[in-house]
Length: 488
Image (cartoon, rainbow, N blue to C red; front, side, top):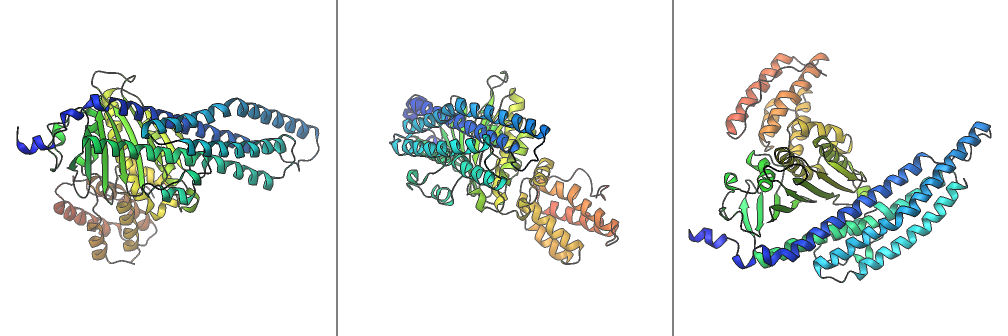
């Protein structure tokens, strides 16, 4: 065996048997944390049901209104009974997540349990008053909304000091937590961080280049990928694990975002446990794919949390709605409050799971661009549409579209636009969507308004496209030369 390959192979003494208990604790922690997230999601949805049947004290006194109000009260009482039945289990799920975090990390989890108990007591006190004023119809709409917001803070709020504290290793956050979501968020990231730190310390990590600034940090606990040589560009053809192979597909195809991406992957029992550092975002994912097995065994399970306080961000949860829109189209079962967290699961045959996992990875890569996309605050559905057409570098794509609008309006010289476009580091898929769809649609719309001559601009785009493709041998040509679009 070559000396450099031997040097980078996992140490035999640290293979799977030594990590069995750690992996078991980590996977238990992931299950309990996701279960707690699902319960929080259900709790938030129950509040939305309450919002939809708000009692209005100013309804005129008529027989039909009295009957209507009685029916509303009956529905509120049913929801109140559901609260009484489900809340103990919801709280128990979060406490189980805290206890499994303690078993994983070895930390004293008493501070988290104490905070959960204090938050629960305050929440139940507010909830009792809230349900009473609703059932007895003692509040106007303003008071109702105010009380609703007070209650939801205990469920979904993430304060800036907590989200910022997660970026500081070792920061003491337990005493600052004031919502169930903050507890789940801190446990999720700290648990993932501690697991990967422990594996690195005991086992070591092999680093592979994925092109540009991107890298894979692989912790192969069972030696499955011993043929791969660290310190070199990854040889995708020699990757054996099907799930690991799938998450690397976007990089093989040259699909990347606007900045650096680091993939932390622990491989054991054929399952990959991952943590992605993507700008301000962190996502974690588990997957297993095996040929010849059905949907009962193959799976993808992922979690994602907003990196900053949603109400202080210009996007106000639009990143979550963007990500959820893509995952829904891919066939995932999704749990999200549409503001701050998302959990999703997918099960299918091996081939379908592999292709879905590759597309999921492309979506995760694209998430980090959305902090800088100005249009993201306006219409996340447009961003979903752009992604599904094949664009991954969303920031570069939208910058190219905006600059082309300036060029069409005469606010930018064509030569300047061409130079800016060449500097966007666009993927082959980005270029194809721009030249096949986005640019022709903009030209057609402006030509119909009588502001430009379409043939002249289409000729310019055709020449520019050919020039860029000559500069980028990795880029595949669009399916056809740009043609004027038939839609506005």
